Amino acid sequence: MIAGLRVKWRDFPSPDADAAPAFGIWVVNDPDGLLDGMTQEEFERSDERMPYFGMIWAAGEALVDRLLKGPALDGMRLLDLGCGLGVCGLAAAARGAHVTFFDWEPRALEIVTASAQRQGELAARCAYVVGDWRTPPALGRFDRILAADVLYERRNGAAVVQLLVEHLAPRGEVWLTDPSRPQARDFPALAAAAGLELLGREVLVAPPPEPAITFLRLRRPAAN
Image 1 (cartoon, helix red, strand yellow):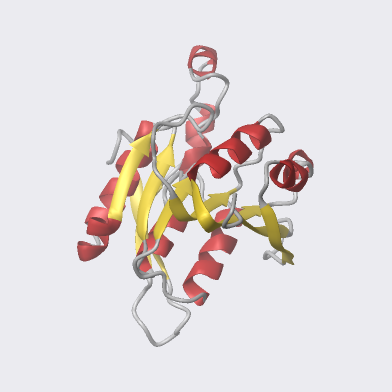
Image 2 (tube, helix red, strand yellow):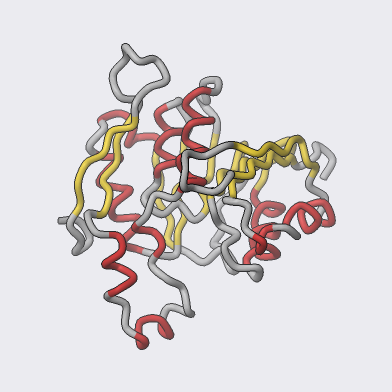
């Protein structure tokens, strides 16, 4: 039990089939139960935010795959925005990054902390912040910001862009994955209007029945 929830351990394999698992995390046994058990009072008290943190979504899995197959991140400072169970940030930490996990749900951060602490020296590269991305605390600047499936509501787009502009270091990058939601269509235009440069856009094929995943890379120009 962590944060009042029953959990189980899940390993994420290394791209090298002969190597030990790249990292692991605690996952919620019954994520659907979080949604089913939410009362109307809790829904209203949490500003109509559902407890989606208990799931590992396809967009997160896709971003983990990119991180594990990519170059080492030694010494880089990363933010895992809307981290949920922390799967993307833990993948980055396993590649050598110093990661700040940021989510509005305290239970999510408790589970992420427990996952990191189980993995020895990896935990020393992790920090945890509970907050709202619409009014974030002072987080500093990051070399890369990871964002998996954060555009599930149209109103999120402007708030996410503002956070990115305020917290990306010059020439820092955003790696964002989204399951091709209609709510996310305006995001590239919002980002461009705020001065972020689109470096690349790919469509990643997810295993059925998951939708195709859109992978965006954006950068804050050096002079911005």
